[in-house]
Image (cartoon, rainbow, N blue to C red; front, side):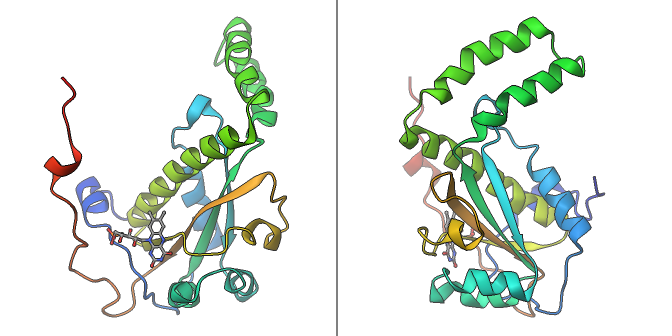
Amino acid sequence: MMTFVNNDFGDVLLHRSSVRDFDPSVTIPREELTAMIQETITAPSACNLQAWHFEVVDNAAGKDLLRQYFMKFNLPQLESASAVVQIFGDTQAFKSYRDLWNKAAADGRITPEKRDEVLRTFLPLYEKAPQSMLVADSSVDSAIAATQLMLVARAHGYETNPIGGYDTTKAAKLFGLDPTRYVPVMAIAIGKPAKNGKDEMKSARYPVDQVLHFAD
Ligand SMILES: Cc1cc2nc3c(=O)[nH]c(=O)nc-3n(C[C@H](O)[C@H](O)[C@H](O)COP(=O)(O)O)c2cc1C
C-alpha cells in the first residue's frame, strides 16, 4: 500500500468536489493506479461478495473505447483525465465465493465449520437469485467501491468526477466483457485539476432536515 499524500480525513472527505477539467500532462503510474484499486477493494460488500470489476483506461487506445459510448458532455473529462476507471457490477461474482472462503479456511482465518456455515447460508441466496437481484446487489457493491475510489484518489492527491452519462448497453462489449454478466455502474475520471479546474464553490446540498428523519 502507498503512503497517502493527503492523510487528513476531514479534507479528503469534505473538500471532494467533481472536477471536469484536468491537467492533460499528468500521468499516473500504473503501480499507483493498482495501489488505488487495491485500497478501493477494502470497501465493504454484501456478504463480502465483492461483486465489482474495474476497467482502467490510462492511454489513447483506452480513451478511444470510452469515446464510443460516453455522452458528449462528458468528453472534456475523458480527454483531459489521467485515468478513467469504468466500474462494472459482476453479477456472477458468487461463482468465486467458494474459493474465497476455502482460502480463508486454508489460511487459518476461519474454521472449516464457520466456512461451511457461511457457504450454506449465503451461497444459495445468490445461486437461486433472479438476475434483477444480482444486478441490484452488484450495483450497490460497485457504488460503494466508487465512493471509496473517489476518496482514495483524493488521499493520493488527485481529484475525480463520477460519470454515469454514457450508453450502458455498449460499455461491457467495448471492453470485451460479457454484457449479460457485467453491468456498468459508474466511471470515475481521475487526475489533477487544470488551472482553475477545481471550482472552489461547493455544489449545493438540501438542508439536512429535509432528508433526515429520526424514526421513533
Ligand atoms: C452516479 C453518478 C453519475 C454522475 N454522472 C455524471 C456525468 O455523467 N457527468 C458529470 O459531469 N457529472 C456526473 N456526476 C457528478 C454529479 O453531477 C456531482 O457529483 C453532483 O452534482 C454533486 O457535485 P460534487 O460532486 O461536486 O459534490 C455523477 C455523479 C454520480 C454519483
